[in-house]
Amino acid sequence: MSAPKTITQGYQAHVSELQSRWENALQAEGYDAALIHAGSKLVSFLDDYEYPFRCNPHLLWWLPLTHHHDSALLIRPGHKPKLFYYQPDDYWYLPPADPDAWWAGEFDVVPVRDAEAWKQAGINTQTAYIGDAASLSSAVDGSQLNPERLLNRIHLERTRKTDYEIACMAEAARLGAIAHTAAEQAFREGLSEYEIHQRYCMSIQLVDAELPYGNIVALNEHGSVLHYQAHEQQVPMDVRSFLIDAGATVHGYAADITRTYAARAGEFADLIVAMDTMQQRLCAAVVSGLDYRELHLRAHIDIAGILKDFNIINTSAESAVETGLSAVFYPHGLGHYLGLQTHDVAGLIADVEGTPIPRPEGHPFLRLTRNLEVGNVLTIEPGLYFIEPLLRKWRENGDVAAINWDKVETLTPYGGIRIEDNIVVTGGAPLNLTRDAFTHTGAL
Ligand code: GLY
Ligand code: MN
Image (cartoon, rainbow, N blue to C red; front, side):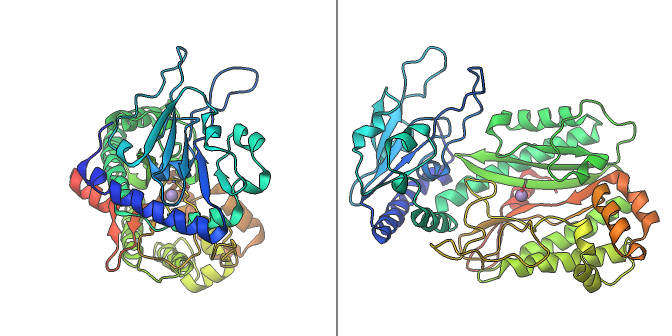
């Protein structure tokens, strides 16, 4: 496996940093070792077909074993981490390649043929076991399996990305920008959702299972379904708009990018420009110390202002936020932490106890409520949609006169708008991985 220099250069420092963070966490929680299990293959009911394998993100934090079920890593203070590298004798499936990759020098690598070879590490009451493999839960005491305080501590640590992690995410953003550019081109050529999705994957040579989440490829009103999952093969009679929320992964690290396009000039295209300007203002406001909830609420005010400017609503922005009207058009959160998981861990907790940091009242879907810190990577993804069930509910229970229904009727066939970038919190100005990547691919 080869990796760009920016990634490999930072790797040794990344592993030493993790060793030190884990040593501190183990000591604080009274453990003398941790064994992190990759996970096992999941097989479908009454058959022997497997679901795509997703490795335990705690293992991926250390090394990029994205396809390596049943490997395990033993971490002990003062010792090089020991990797039980599972390489079965298999002729049904291709076993993992020999572990002679760029990452291998940081580990004491033990190739093993037995999926339960990790038990040679010795089951010990002072060892914490991290993972969800059935073999783990049957072999170790429940109190040692995924101890909550230790996990909270590690989850909080994972919110501060190292240079290696940011390099992986910058590379994922670069791939994402290339694929988004190819997808926009396919949309302009008049292709179907299915064909656009294929173009996306082909342009960066990833298959569906390697994407961080199912691509959302939505023409026209499909853009109003927030996690739209179909890939329609028919091209609509009249193609008006295109919303694509699609990412890429590099060594397990995700990009999570959304863009919206209009087929032609007009009011919807103007609305995209207004949303894009506003989204970039929000991105620029990402600084260390900021309470992310405030930024989410500011997005509501800004979106309500756009709704008013475009004559979609008849009330002031402040009143639209107060009455919940802005949430009819923008019903999700502003964003989330990003990393080894698309919705990365610890976005809603204050401390190792897991004390929740509450969401603002009336905002049940916000996934990040913390004060931002240097090294955090997060998304900024405001949206504005014409969602039939939410509009109907408002018509039945809300202030009907607050919405300009003629305008809504004109815009509903366009679905909606979401624009999403991935931002690194630095000691100074925020680093926008996504805009930088689009700039370097030559796209907007
Ligand atoms: N991109 C999908 C999500 O953030 O939920
Ligand atoms: Mn997202």
